[in-house]
Length: 156
Image 1 (cartoon, rainbow, N blue to C red):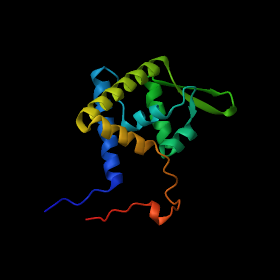
Image 2: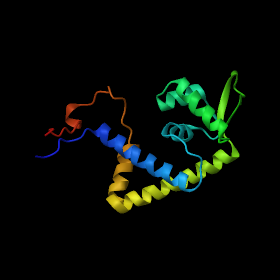
Image 3: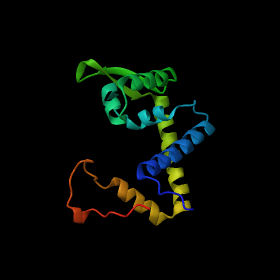
Image 4: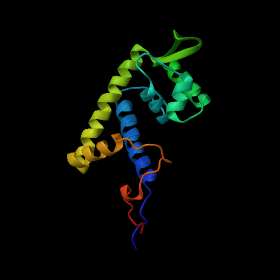
């Protein structure tokens, strides 16, 4: 009996976890203090000059409380700092410290290595096609397109 076809969101989630697991293992092997997947995501969402907690929460699709907790832990680890926002007296920017920038550079190199490993496993052409599909503008989920433009495959 064949396995039911998995939904695309499940497959994308598995792919994300593959990268997160590989990244966390690589950072641990380099001696970086253990961090959570939420902290990894937060780190990736930061602008070079800093980002507000509210904006990070919006980008990550989580609550401000979740972001505050992650920021506090990364501040305690001396990877992030909070500084006044020059554009708003009421806001503070979250940004990487010098150690945080070094950790971010190590993470970037680890992710590059994971992409090389993935290309070895699925092929360079498949990786390029995956990247192109994920970078293409998808529009909003409720945007309507002509039925002829939507390719529908029957589900088993």
